Image (cartoon, rainbow, N blue to C red):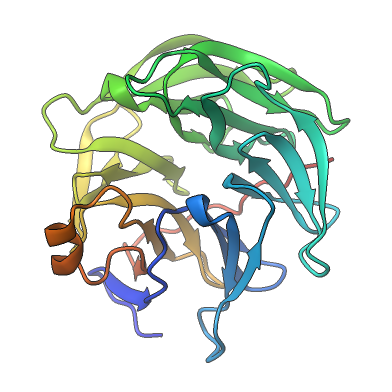
Length: 295
């Protein structure tokens, strides 16, 4: 796999809605979700083999590495554990069972091993009826805050004291004070303003220098933000809808990006032949290892 400073298509997987990409250093594979197909994908970038695809009984919004093996899942109906060898899904907890139009959408593991995931309302017009939840190691679920239309961009600063989050329709990324010891979040305030941009903030990750990388849905680019929220760098992509990103490879120096063709009209989809694929580049900075769910 030849990757340089410009983004290149490294896997032409044509996912409808690729999301929640992670690098697992234990097996040297990328893992991600194809949400609307209910699939978990994995692929070894340096091997010649085809990706593995596991089809689940319902849609999966996000996945997380797990200390005890397998993966933690944020399914549309709640949290679960996936045995990645046998393909068995074990449900942990339902979430928002009383809300017919919501599902879990985006999440990552905090520095203490909790799986934090936010939901979204799929009704039109979209309403702020969902929330962000924390799954603790004992399987208990606690809400962190509500009023959410469509959660995305969940990640942490290197010291774990800042939680980043976007409610996509607000057209901004927020930051919150976070206590890894208790899992509490407070002091939500704006971090980056996208009101003048063509796209919406989607998935994010933070690099080893503490800068936030954000995939911008509808904007055809990923943006690196400094810790003060200013734009440090923009990287254009040949597709409209990048969705999420992670640092991977043995040295965590390659930025991998999921994309989607979901939401494109017929003409745009015909023009964007690489939409739904995995892109990669070497941005000149390294990432941090993903935290693992402790339950």
